[in-house]
Length: 418
Ligand code: LLP
Image 1 (spheres, rainbow, N blue to C red):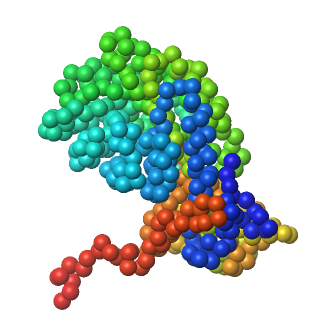
Image 2 (cartoon, rainbow, N blue to C red):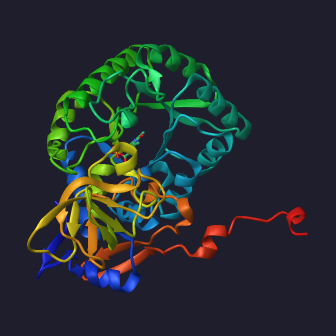
Image 3 (cartoon, protein in one colour):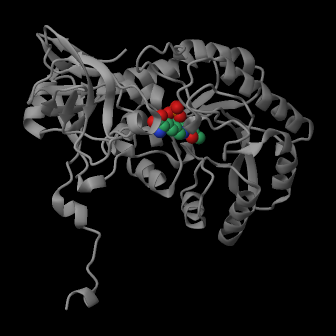
């Protein structure tokens, strides 16, 4: 449940009118509800109260430092996938001992940085990476805490771009070879085995694949136990889906009870890396209608575009379109499109929507996860601000970029200056 709702005909985020924020900060902008963030985090955490666990919020879903701080203040750790995300997490106040680091392409400098900061563990995704981490730790004269990220080969029944635990995906280590690689890891003098991890995909709307994955990983943990290899942490990744349209994903409570039933006998601390389920419906993208074009096909041209929110273009995903000021009367079927010079630049396609007019404000719902973080400067469009509302007050947590920001890192070499 989220705190975006119409009051007296105007969309509000908690107690704050979205129209008034648009008036002050201009459009487009991302808008997050603090109370929704906290509520979603707490619901997830509470669901696992009967299992020893650590939540490592997945920074990739929304890595604004104010958002990270919100969860850190609630006791969350952080799941990072790059040196940049680690930097953000630490800047936001994360305890390094609660940070896990996944990803198939960790560079040596990133590994060194994470080792210096004493993170909880690396989720190692290849044989070569295992040796590189051992090597870096050796030059530093320390032990590197690791888990192997196993690929359990489970179909998560989601969009192919975000299915990660199947054999065809680049992620993790074949579950059938994991035992052999744990033995290898045990023989490497600068590695300390801390856990096992797996993440099978994102936007899952069924529990079955999670339970199947856990069963396979559990088998591995038991075999490791037989060999005297102790697994302290069982990291089950993220992936729980949300409702964008008509999906009916399980409530965290249902997800938790299935995991607890299957996993409670294991003497491990469980780690969860939720992203979307916490932030997805806690954020919207607010944009203004610039023009409408009527014809065989109708278009509503708004000032946000695929560079601001790429999900519809990239995954064909559905984001609900809501008028900020409640509109009575007729609807039209139209594409909602942005100013970018590509036909793939759309936020909604063939969608029934109110008969919008220039100047109207539109909320693109469910944009809190994989929204701003995936935005770019394509077509030299400055990235939009991010705003956080708590009760009746809004806070700009990231400024709108300026034209000067667009060229700040660029240089004209001297040979061009003659
Ligand atoms: N842990 C790992 C290792 C991951 O790779 C991911 C997401 C998560 C946790 C968090 O998953 P979540 O709970 O948010 O499903 N850009 C795509 C989603 C990419 C997900 C990548 N990995 C989208 O907009 O749908």
